[in-house]
Length: 123
Image (cartoon, rainbow, N blue to C red; front, side):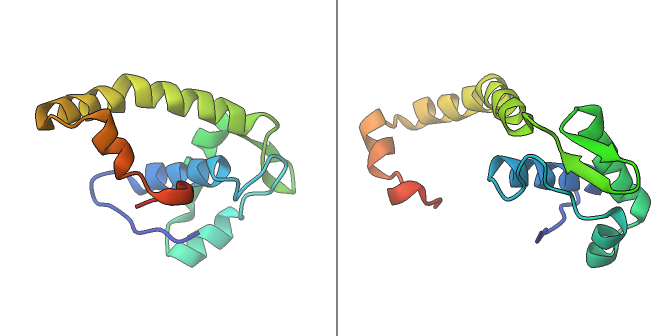
């Protein structure tokens, strides 16, 4: 897990979003264990409470579960729930801003598709 922290968002929230991205990208699969709180805290020089808070939010959203004495694990169906909620958030919050900018710039669908990266690679 490589992370560049931003000053504009609390670190626990950035850490949580990184775990979400790992689940969505398939780096963490259902049934996989999350790295331990101590391990993450040591690796990124974070307060263990910060890591615990990120993990607790994931648990509160039923994306991970705590197994006593074993740690935190990605739950069954987590990726599908994340895909649904992230798609909904994108369409309601991000897409209207992107669309408005596309319209302001007078871009056509053909122009947008012509600049699309090949083979799903990100730009």
